[in-house]
Image 1 (cartoon, one colour):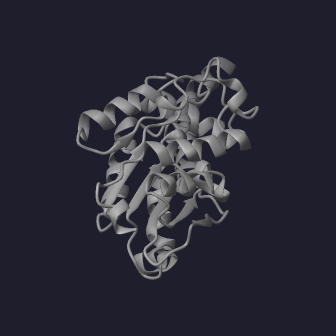
Image 2 (image 1 turned 45 degrees about the vertical axis):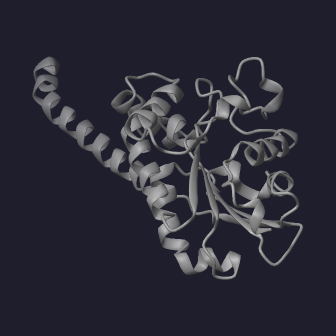
Length: 263
């Protein structure tokens, strides 16, 4: 008798679990970060014709951690020309969420007010870490990286830093909901693989071969053997490493031949 009742209830139970999974999945997709983006600026050798740099990215671009090393390095390359660098950091956001929040909270007039109403000479995009560890899929990373580049089409140049090397495999999600969502997405979009950095990188290079990129591997080529540059979570750099990273970006970004002459 119990088996008969269970057999009758089983289809309903399956349907209930399926609906619960769908509702939970939709709820997880709708979760948004409530913390505000951080805006920081650094000015080196102020002058009448400062070179303008805007850095937009995830937590690596937050709190001015790469300043003043980045603008100082660029100023040296430009023969002492003044450099004003600003960063906008969106902690924990993948490229899709970052793009949506950027458009909503930083229209062009607000962005360019950081430079007295002028468009930046250089935009540096630092994204991809959260895309990989949140497993949003290579196609989504490529799509919203392209949208971010297009958003700054009126800047003189836009460069994208290739996805930094972090410890993707052992990253610990901050809560149960995040764990469930990442597990679902990891199998849905990334073949249940944990380490997808190179997959996302190759997808971007394949679809946008002419995109200007800064190769992160010239700074740190792999996580193993370089653990002392990272905090215990294996995802964020130490303060000392962030300063070195700012100097690296300043030396690796391209500069037009006439930039120094405009000092």
